[in-house]
Image (cartoon, rainbow, N blue to C red; front, side, top):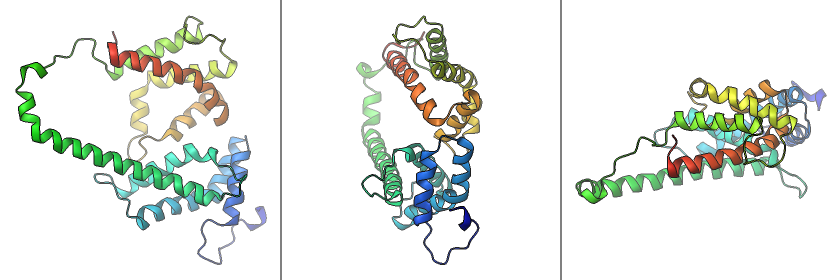
Length: 247
């Protein structure tokens, strides 16, 4: 494959055998430097073209969002699912990745449509509902807030690292400890993290993963495995916070 680098394509096929082979090499290597090199050399342009073509061909435009933002958001989501591709049954990466992109955007549009219908429905009865005393509700001081939630999550991860949490019965592995420490550093500066992810890269999990790799020195696969411990913790705290408030 290396001998073909730099050669101009003789046809309009932007995702052909070379890219299919590159996907397999990208997924099979544990070396992040090699993986980034494969992506930049062989996959970046074709995947950009794939997402662009799907949006334009099927007219999957999202109201209130620019084409560039939708493109970036979809590509970012695709890269979080790219590792699930398997060619054991002769499936092509082009078809598999294209389906992921289409389903993701369609899901966004369906969700937008449901929200819009709810807004219209509420506007029709809003004034009546707002006048009913039995539907008035004052939020308590323990109302769920992002600041309180993040603080409790950081404290709980600290407890987990110190062996004080009853959520995890097994002792933390070395990788889980690294990921836990990285999560604490990232969460403590969560407002800055969101700012860096704004402007067309919202929901960009790749940015978080890149930060995690820099913090821990672990591969994406190892980070995902270690994160399972803390995803469970996150879910428990979130449910408790929404139901009972976070003090």
